[in-house]
Image (spheres, one colour):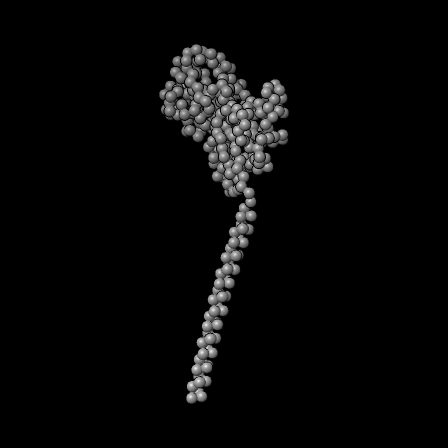
Length: 295
C-alpha cells in the first residue's frame, strides 16, 4: 500500500514537471516570435531612413522636343533618387514661359531657345528681358544641349523634296512650320527669310502652322504636308526622313538652356536633378536621339 502511494506521488510530480516545461517552452517561442517581429520592424524603419526620408515632387517644364528623352531619364532617376518624383510639363517654350510668368508651379525650366529663358532671367539684361522678370535662380542656369534644325519629309517623300532650296519650287504644295512664338518656328522663319522664300510661300498659301514641334512633326508623319521644318531629335523619334540640315549661315545655333527657378520650393533637389542631366548616363540618352552636349 505504501509503495502504491509513493508511485502515485512520483507520477503526479512528473506530470507537473512536464506541464511546467511545456509552459516554459511556449513562453520561449512567444518571446522569440515577438523579438523577431521587433527586429523586422526595426530593419524596415532603418531601410526607410536609408532610402532618403522625405519625398519630394519636382515640376519640370521642358520643351516638347525633349519628351522622349526625359521620359526615359525619369526611369533612370527613380533608381538614383527614389524619393524624388518627377512631374513633366511638355509644350512649346513660349507657352511654358507664359505659364511660369502667370504663376504656375515650376522647379526646373528647360527651353528650346535662349529667348524664352532670357525673358525670365533678370541677369539677361533689359534688351532681352523687356518686362524685367526675375524667375531664374542666380547661378543655376546652364546651356544643357544642342539640337539641329532639319527639313523632314513623309515616308516615301512623295513630293521629291531634297533640300531647303526645293521649298521655292513647284515641288512644294504645303510646308509645315511652328508658330512664330515657338522656337522651332522662329528658327524656321530665320531660315526661310535668309533664303528669301518666306514672303512668297505665305503669299501662295503654302504654309501650315503648328503650336509646337510635335504638331509639326505629326503633320509630316501623316503626310498632311509635303515637308516640315523640325528638330533632328523629333525627326529621329518619329522615324522621318531628313533631307537637309540647317547650317549656321541659315539660322543660329539651337541651344537648350536649363535653370532652377526662384519660385521653386525644392531648390536643392531641383539643382541636384539639373546636375544629373549633365552626367554621362543622361548624355548617352540625349545623344541617342540626336542631341549633343554644348561645346
